[in-house]
Length: 438
Image (cartoon, rainbow, N blue to C red):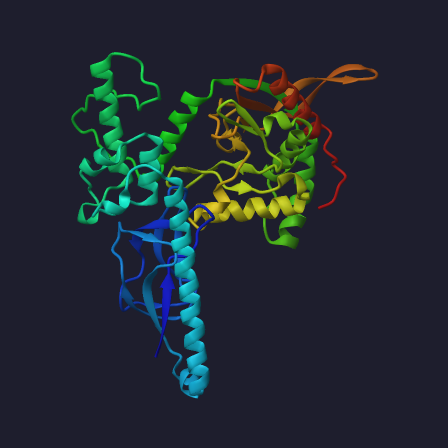
């Protein structure tokens, strides 16, 4: 029997560790290649780790809830490779072992280098003198919130062996914010989490704590409203050409490609073209500086079966043709629903689109996905009687109409720019070439 070491994979350029949330296989279980072994979570996404080989899970090294660095061995799978091992010469066996050791060494060095880079960016407190382990995420929060190293050491940890978790430090910050407000009676220099509202619980009411992802979403939404003064503009678009074209090609596309073509890739394509025309919406704000993004990376908000929300990102959306866009949209949406997205696939967005129409909502006022400055809302497509202007005069016709809503950061985007973007987007949609093939 040969043994295969399963390591915590590299989940993105900025990810150096992950939390094991659930073991899907136990010691002694038979595993096939690509079977999910465990679920992990980072501060960006939840994922499943598949098995790279067939075999039996014979050993695990970490419990659920533990944080593991990238490149560290988390489990061992025993494979049925006796024949290959026996047939290999001693020289080949030594070479194979040497190559494996070298790969493991490189993985370990890579993980250590990533950890060192995080350490070097955090100059607060001498963590080396502590007998307590602090994750890079906790150190980063401590630095950002100006928590002295001495104060950090005094916070009780709820993790394994008294380890300080992200929630521990967030609880500390919430209490610290309340104490400061009560004592000083002056506005704080930085936003603090608002105190919770006292809610009466009635007989028969059910109390359920927010899940990890819902807490992240809640914090992100509150932060966005605190950071950006939101303004929302609306415009109607006649998408009759798009509706008729999709009805004409959807069956042949499904038969040829084995997947559906929805309206989403068409709208993303038009939104990307309009961003090229008005790059002032493809920016971020860093203090008093405006960062004009070179690339157009569009996030598409997707509702998950559990009610949560995730935003996979289509990179370089302005450089894709319609069939490529359709396949990318379908792939990301499918893997989002099955928790198979990688952290890099939900990060780096420069503009976001959310589809209210999926739930028959006519329109909405979305919240900006920081650090972006704008988000586009797509309303439901409905048939309405409208005035149609013709050279022979006006007439009434039945058309497919949708409402587009654009929420933008009024610090850097004024109503004129927001309105011009929506107008150009409408032009792309209404001028859609209904004779094109896909």
